[in-house]
Image (cartoon, rainbow, N blue to C red; front, side, top):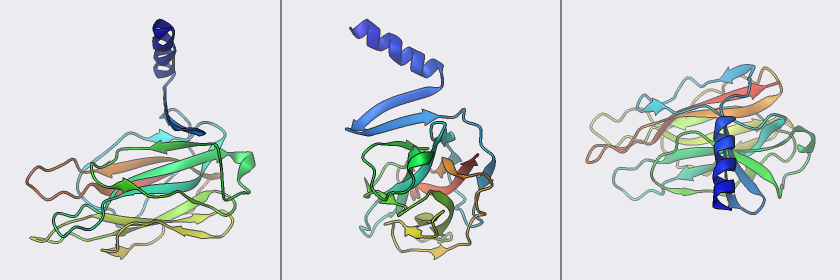
Length: 208
């Protein structure tokens, strides 16, 4: 039995997919191979850290919801927003705001905080976004990205449960293609006794 599981895992890695189960009805799928049509960027991302790998929804699925990894304020070396998950559903099922089965993807994630509840589009899929980012503080405590907001194809807006420091920048462009289908994040590694900022910037991808 153990040999069979090992073989199946090797096959998944070979095809470019790594799957793990977080809870009933939820799959984490990592795929970098899906073709995308356009990239969405914002002008106010933070300057620290390095870009992680691009992660894409499985073919035929698009992001209809998201959740955030956020460190609560505690008055010393705040990091604020640490991670973003996109929650993907089949393109034929974007008419509900509650889903029992979905696939989750995430790029690099910071070390601190907890995951917020999922925010779903009332209908449709995610099409564009903007970031709340704190500018460099000089000798003060830097937090970089603090929160994110998305627009849904049905016309509604979803604001994340991040922290309140910083300023909202301009919106990214709107998807060229159908909807958002992938994510890549820029995250600063832990700095030891230095100032930590965790998540600094993000790119979203749109697929046909």
